[in-house]
Length: 231
Length: 248
Ligand SMILES: Nc1ncnc2c1ncn2[C@@H]1O[C@H](COP(=O)(O)OP(=O)(O)OP(=O)(O)O)[C@@H](O)[C@H]1O
Ligand SMILES: [Mg+2]
Image 1 (cartoon, rainbow over the protein chains, first blue to last red):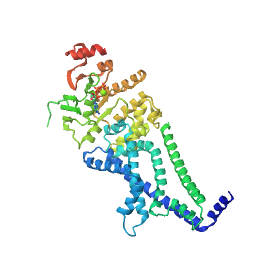
Image 2 (image 1 turned 45 degrees about the vertical axis):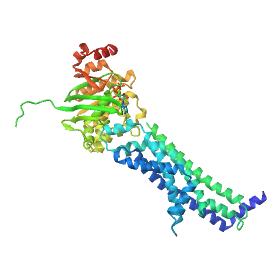
Image 3 (image 1 turned 120 degrees about the horizontal axis):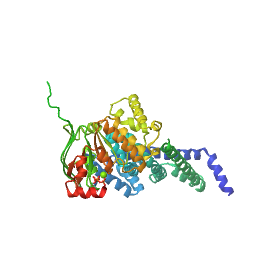
Image 4 (image 1 turned 90 degrees about the vertical axis):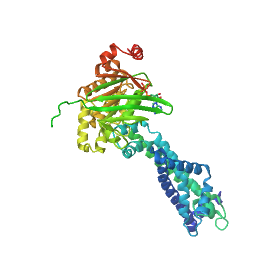
């Protein structure tokens, strides 16, 4: 026990360790942030194609279906390997971009399903009311469908953000120095020679961020529910 | 240039309209004209295609074949939005936009389609709201309105666009008996002000009272058409006789 506390003190008083920890943490945050952002945009595009009604969208719908099926049917770690060792096996290509794209492409498939479900859950009567008034598809989507879909989407999308954030830990498998890797490195023989404290510290960092994300999502949900009963 | 014979304008004309959903042939060749100022009540058994007929007119359903014209212009994919703006529709389930306030429901289309600017639109909306006694609901969301209030707002929402024709699909079927009267009063008033109307309803007394013509649809075809007097007192076909025996 005494040893445990002394290890905590050691971790937090050695600038080199603190530095490693925060570098790793920053990389984790960066990858997750950009991956979620890009993944959402791409997912939105896929969802719009899949819920669109024009006939010329049909071939694109097929492509989207195939894409989503492949992504959801294969392990994330393998997708990461394919991005690193096949698609972006380019010397000096920035690793972080490869990682962001790998997670974005993965998240896009899941986000698109969430967004599509949200759009489809909006009562068709709402769309038909807009059509009967002569509104354009664009106005119907932006003023009627999207605002109603968002309410159904936010909770599931929040979960997706959390999932991506935690999954980024597998970038340590391709040698990137993220929070997970930092914990392993700090605990290794050349450094603290004990994994317990650095790994539990990393766990706390992950937990704190997950908690923060859930909190923000709950606040957004609450605010949206308020506008529902506004009289 | 003097025009000697002033014929009544055809607002909507339907020719050889067919509509199938997969193998289900719902409309089987409908020919129909709606003239300016007419109040046509569409009757028929459940599932006969009344709603589908109405929804084909403003292309909420794409006809399988046939032609539909508005004031002698065939409605096609290019002009359909323009036509919809002139053909108002009131739905059985009101379909007020749930994320918009009553005021926003009323002003959205006229403002977006540049019929009115926002100030004019709100002024007009307030006038109509006052008329139906719902001034204080302007900033409420539809969820806080009763069924009857929703439907009356839906009717004035259609009126905001100053349509030339109003289509009603069972406007009182989802209402409790008490609010049916309010909605029927408003429809009657709109009709009396000269609006050209087509209405599907199961309110036989109202049909008798308001209709200038009754159209009976069975299995996707118009099988009988007459003035309300004759339709109710001397139905020609056995099918209509049987129908009237059940509903009257
Ligand atoms: N979107 C749709 N997809 C498939 N079938 C449909 C669709 N809309 C209507 N139908 C079918 O078309 C037929 C006619 O329906 P419609 O709603 O036009 O009848 P209706 O005369 O309005 O009946 P009701 O008095 O019950 O409202 C029914 O068999 C119905 O199942
Ligand atoms: Mg119907």
